[in-house]
Amino acid sequence: MAKEIIENYSKFFFLSSLIGMVLLSIYLVKSYIVTMVGATLLAYIFYPVYKGIKRKLKNKKLSSLVTTVLVVIIIIIPILFAANALLGESVTFFHKTKNMDLSGFEDKISDHYEGDINLNKYIKENMNKLSLSLARNTSQFVLALPQKILSLFVMLFLMFFLFMEGKGITEKIKSHIPLRAKQKRELSNKFSNVIYASIYGMIVTAFVQGAVAALGFWIFGVESPILWGLVTIVVAILPFVGAALVWLPSAVYMLAIGETFNGLGILFYGMLIISTIDNLIRPSIIGSRAKIHPALVLLGVLGGIELFGFLGIIIGPLILSISTMFMDLYFLEKGKK
Image (cartoon, rainbow, N blue to C red; front, side, top):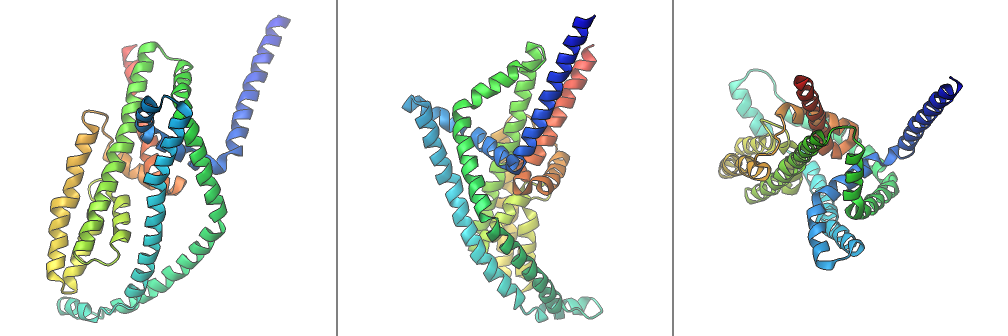
């Protein structure tokens, strides 16, 4: 009896200590959770590249280093250049919008609708509010710049080791999952398909749409094409409307100010090319793999951005998709009993 009490006490002590240390560890790294998730996502995306390089170099550390440098060249450096261009275009767009004269457009609307419409006053008031908000956010960004540089270093450092040890970590986690071998295989396949569909299906398609949209905006004379191309990347992930949230208002605006050729050009370019790309690229990437329900995408993007910031665009839908996958497996196993 005394032996059983001691054994139960030991189990309770060990379990309590384990839970306590896990919670303490999460609290310790909470500032870097988004960084860790970002490193994991990039490691997953570029893992096939790492495997190809490792086959050539026959050295894990050197292959991981080369792949990490490639990520910096392919992802990080273009983002820095895009951010610089975005900053310049945003300032130009802000000043032009603030000084925009829409009196002619107001007269056209007044011909069809009664009442006094003062778009110029409305735009200037909102631009003043936006300028104050941008000033606050810019100062906060500058103050947080050392932390962001540190987070970038941590992300690259973690990614370097994930390339080398990610497969071993994954296998160790799989071996400790308390499921039968068949269930583990089903779980692993579904998990892989959901992640593949989330990352490659949504993100790659959105980036292609954003790049094509930016090109179209530049061709048809839309101000700040890089800015609106980046906005297109974000909204392209949203179901049903997607990229049309950007190119359609742009076309309407160009037509409203008398730029008929450019307005019609953006309209047809958006319908025939930007929005059609989604239907061509996404099925070819995903194929017969798991398809993510549009409702999960919408809720995941909105909730993910609120919780994780920009990375939430990927993490949010991914979390909801994986949760749905676990529920499907649970109900499937329950139905077999």
